[in-house]
Image (cartoon, rainbow, N blue to C red; front, side, top):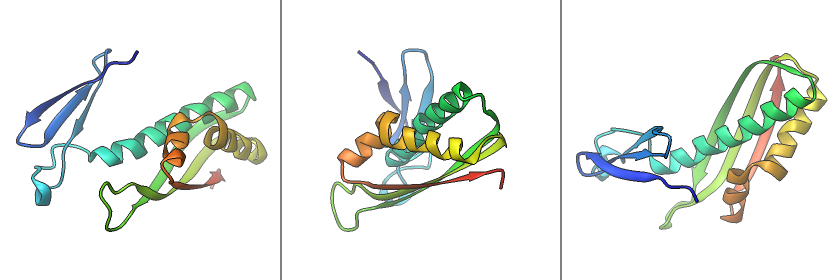
Length: 140
């Protein structure tokens, strides 16, 4: 079982989450809704988790294929449902940017495997009704 501890540390809505190894994330809401911009919005943390989860998958798959990943970044854009509470992620798009000695077909396949088979965060979002799309760029 995984344990995460969350404690309010700043103002009314500034929280810090800590895992069992002591790693932390600061979270807050906007000043318009009672926060002080102490940290990332909790729904944005979910998109960050998507990037981390898929990124780890993709790097590991490409390493097994003996591809050399010298640089890797992602741009993740999300759009939430309008006028609903709770407001879930409706559309999320990821652009994977890979640099190195990487075969484009292998890069695409690694991203496809992560997004459609291995990434638990992607599957969690899909189960909530999110439309996930993605693109791959190699050495651009």
